[in-house]
Length: 102
Ligand code: FES
Image 1 (cartoon, protein in one colour):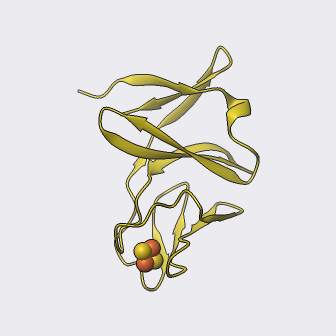
Image 2: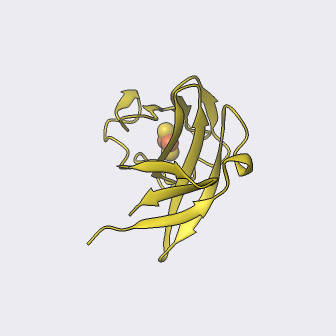
């Protein structure tokens, strides 16, 4: 069953950036984009590469290893070599905290 988990404060994530968030033995990425906050799996779907040092460009995350890109809002794989979408998670901001539904 999914539940909302208090992950961090909005100020913890710089604009146009992401942070790593670990919960329940799983690593997530929390993004601050021009469209708001979003969450995805941390690991690229191409190889076991963390997206933590990746580049956030608008609502796109670029993997630091081979430059594959994903839509942060939908997780959709946008450019080679990635062809498997990134899993996304619902996010809400409430009472000055960011909650992720996992
Ligand atoms: Fe991310 Fe290759 S590991 S594009």
